[in-house]
Length: 74
Image (cartoon, rainbow, N blue to C red; front, side, top):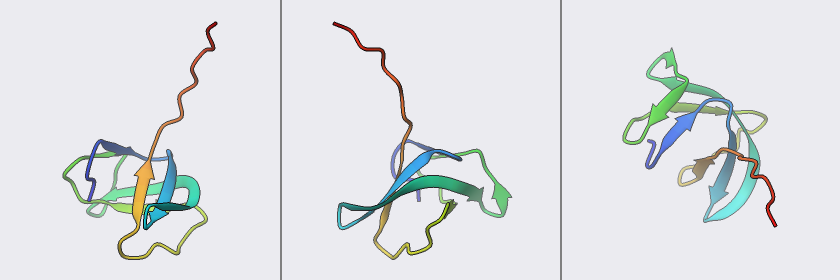
């Protein structure tokens, strides 16, 4: 279940186990029921596929984030 924010497909992710990052990669697939979804909002359940990782265990947290480039200023 999405606890907070919005999950978007093809975004970078972190898998946390006991609040320690154990994997960083990319979200490969996102489904809402049996349909592909481009985004899922807070409060909704979804299925998530993580590229090159299949060791997710009960209790793990998956953080989906966006990288934003910020111009330097003096």
